[in-house]
Length: 162
Length: 162
DNA sequence: TATTAAACGATAATTATTATCGTTCGTCAA
DNA sequence: TTGACGAACGATAATAATTATCGTTTAATA
Picture 1 (cartoon, rainbow over the protein chains, first blue to last red):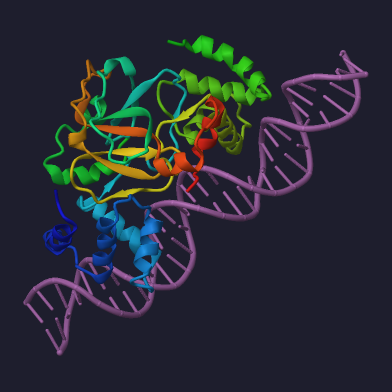
Picture 2 (cartoon, rainbow over the protein chains, first blue to last red):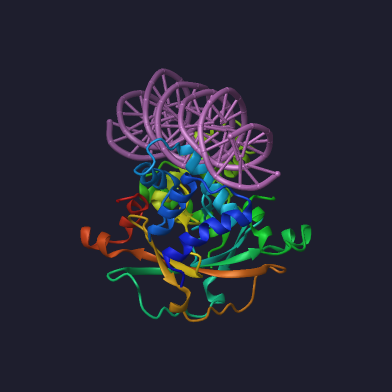
């Protein structure tokens, strides 16, 4: 398990490896992101960072968040951020999502074995259901571009192909 | 398993039960949604419906999609539609999401037993990983409003409380 | 320390979505 | 069946989230 301190220390090294300038703004933005256990919005990050750098621009936060995502320093919580996707399937089911074209396929609940959760970190949380997402590359996209060479290519996959 | 025909037949009945007028626009919008196995965006629905009702307004599609969501005729594919949520946790982990306040909590991967998928409906899909989401109500929200009485209350839970 | 490209702040533009408002149409009682 | 009325419609303005532009500043490095 990575500590906040070690992540913060690695930040400069990782930036240099990526050819990114280590600016004060970037350091503070990243610091806030690893300091919080929450999963904030860019706007929320902006508010926190502004306490330390009052002159920072919201655009700078967005630009750097995007840079960090592309670099793999950050991840999006969900592949489905962005425009609303509708589901008229009333049967219980799960989804399979292509990281390239963002197409969504249904998987009936019966295709999965039971989910075992050992113990719940957050006390008092009332579980309604488990939602499983199979993340990967669909047949069509795999055929179009067979091999995304190495882990570095994953960032480009955040963009839509189809 | 509900057939498209039965769903389309139920549409009028369900609308009347909900006090919603059965308009041509609504019938076509809903029809397109159950006709497609995809999970379209409102914009995509608009394009499809426009082929049948050229004068329809995009606003009407949005309004009715919202009405259908509130009524439970449709669901959103993801709770994370809307603004971007960032994740600086580089360890493999899953998420627990509160349907009321939309707060997101981390669950280490080790808290779950292995996921068993019997067979993949979409041939050629290359699985990268499974992402499990524990959906429910967090302790704080449950304490604030203990019982969301009956299934009808679930629609209101789509809105943010915190 | 001087050069230079990258990053910054300010702000305009774009995209997704919601709200407004006058007109039309589905519902239901007569 | 018709007529009244409120709900839904289409057009369009407004808002929110995000991205792009552009002139200025700053980090990297020679």
